[in-house]
Amino acid sequence: MIRRISLIVLLVVIFFGFLYSVIDLEAFFSTYGKDYFFANGYLETGSLNLVTGIYLDYRLFDSLFEAGILIAAVSGVTWISQHEITEKNASFMLDKQITPGLFITFSRMVYPFMLMFGIYVILFGHVSPGGGFQGGAIVATAILILYYIDSKKATSIDKILTIEKILFLTILAVGSISYFTKGTFFTNPFALSASEAVKSIYLITLNVLIGIKVSLGLVAIFTAFLKEGR
Amino acid sequence: MIELVSYLLQIILIVIAISVVIHKRNFTIIILIATFGLVAASLYIINKAPDVAIAEVAIGSAIIPLIYVISISRQREFIVLDRTNDGFIEYGFELSGEGYQILSDFVKEFDLSLNICVDIQGQAKKLIEELNVDLIVTKDNQTNQYVFYGKASSVLMTKLKNQVKDKPHIKIITLKEEKKND
Image (cartoon, rainbow over all chains, first blue to last red; front, side, top):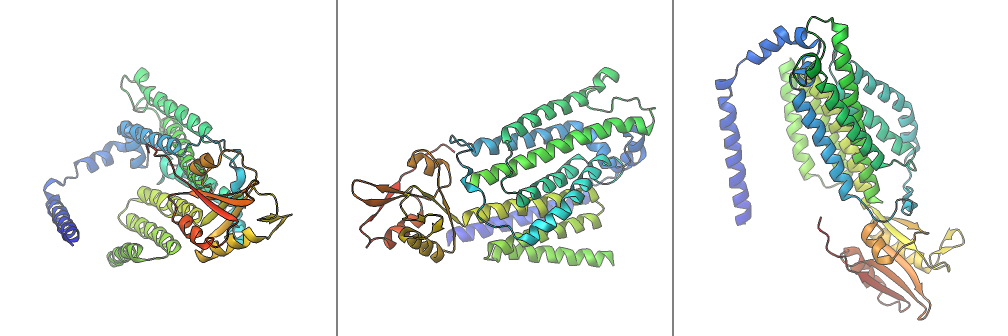
C-alpha cells in the first residue's frame, strides 16, 4: 500500500514537473536556427532535404556517435547471446512451427518491392524525405522477412559485425576527407561553389554507407534474438 | 479539419497506450504496439516531420513487432532431447509410446507445443545451461529406469514431477544452474 501511494506521488510530481517545463516553452522559443537553415542550408550543403543536410554536414559528428551507439548495441547483444556449444550442434531448432502458407506467399510478393523502396529511400535521401537510417531500417525489414520464408537460413553474426566495424571506419574516413580539401573535419569536401550534382556525390556516398551499416546492425540483432531462443 | 484529425489521433494514441497495458493476450498486444507506431507516424506527418515518420514506421511497426513475435513464440515451445532409442518416445518414424503420451498430455495441459529432437552431443548439464533444451530423456541401463533431466529453476519441472510420481520406472533429476555474471 505504501509502495503504491509513493508511486502515485512520484508520478504526480513528474507530471507537474513536465507541465511546468512545457508551459515555459515560449520563453526560449526562437526561429533563429530555422531561418538560418532555410536561408543557407541548400547553398552550403547541396541537399534539398534539410534534415539530411543537417545530419550529414552540420552535425555529422552527432551521426557518427549514433552509428557508434548502434555498433555498441550489436556487440553487446552478440556478447550476451554467445554460446560455447557450436551452432552446428544446435541445428535442432529447424523451426517445427509452421509458418502459414498465405504469409509466405505474400512475403515473396512484397519482398522485392520492400527492398527496392528501401534502396530508393537511401539513394534519394538528399532530395526527398528519408536517408541512410530510414532506408536501412526498411531494407533490414525486407531481409528479416526472408527468415519467415526460409527458416533454415543461416547468418554468421561475427562476419556481419566485422563488416560493420569496417563500415564505421569507412564513414569516419569519408567524413575526414574534408580536412585535406577544406581544413575542417566532418563537412562536405567539395567547394561551396561546386554544382549540386558534385556536392550530392558526398551525400549519396555517406547515405549508402550509413544505410548498409544500419541494415546489417538490425539484422544482426534480430539473428541474435532468433538464435537465443533455439 | 486537419487539427480535428490530429486531436482524434492523439486520443486514439492514448487509448491504444492504455489498452497495451491492460490487455492480457500477448499477440493482441503486439498488434496494438504496431498500431501505436502507425498512429504516431501519421501524427508526425501532420506535424511536418516526414523523415521521423518513415523511421517510426520502419522501426516501430515492423521490426519491433517481428522481434516480439519471435521471442513470444519461442516461449511457447517445450524442447525435449530424446536419447533413448528404444521406442519410449520415438518408435521407428512415428511418435508414439508411453513417454510421448506422458509428455504430450503434459504439454497440452499448459498450452505449449512439443518440439522433440535427437542427435545433439554434449553433457546434459551443459546442454541445459547453454541451449534452450527444457528436458533430456535418457535410459539408465543398470536400473532399467528412464531418467528425465531438467532445470531446477523451472516451474514446469516441479509440475512434471508431480505428474509422474506414481510411475516407478521414471526418475526425474533436476540440475542446478551455476550463477552467471550477466
